[in-house]
Image (cartoon, rainbow, N blue to C red; front, top):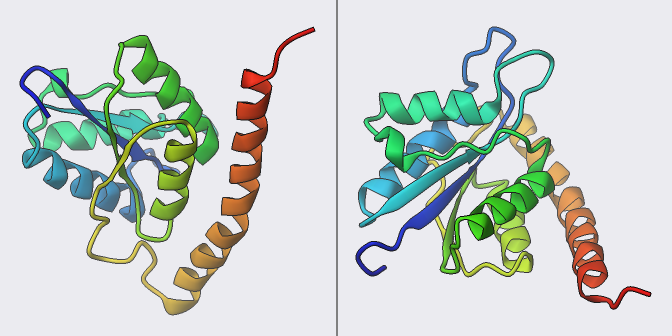
Length: 175
């Protein structure tokens, strides 16, 4: 990227523990994004994910982790409204367009979740850059890993359908 242009790195959230601390999955995603950002000329990290069950937002918890990892406040722009993956794509797209960004967007998540995030960001009309996922799997046990893979297998076509419907509505002429 040229000087002055920022590379947004969207970090997709994961549930916060009941005590308000980051889950292992959340921590691993943030560490992968921060590592990627260190090699970028002018990164803008966008942790996304809203609050649930009276807990702090996923985005706020991730922003705290980023600061602990040495990321400057000016390089962090939390998005605290999204309730799920598709919501994060839509909210981050609005945020990026509002600040005038029209370049590529890097996407950070766990290996099992990354394909859905990348497809949805591409359907939102962004050039997508893949952030290498964490080296460690999000789930430690094999059955849990398969649970998340199967869940993503079902969620991907559903979210793609929802995104395509949104795009069709946005481009159709209104009566």
